[in-house]
Image (cartoon, rainbow, N blue to C red; front, side, top):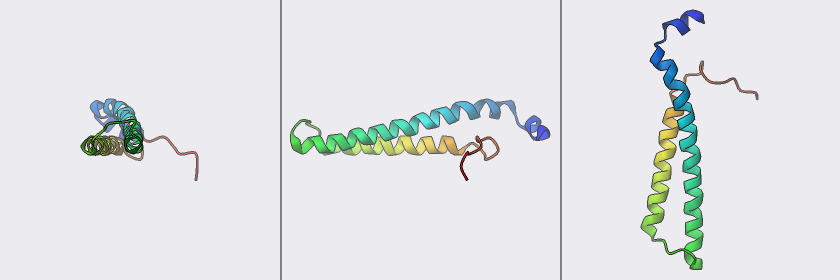
Length: 88
């Protein structure tokens, strides 16, 4: 294990931590954007929000894009660098 850690470049080690944090943040942000889009859909018939269908579509599209980018950033972590799971 020590040999494998020494053979990895230093840039890879410094990239893994921030990528994981940014990936998790983007996924959370995407979930919040979807929640806001749902509230926009619900608020439109009630008359509380004056949002166009294009606005709702762009909100959901941006949430999907952010979620995909977050998953890619989290997927860069190999299984050896991930934290051990507590469950089975």
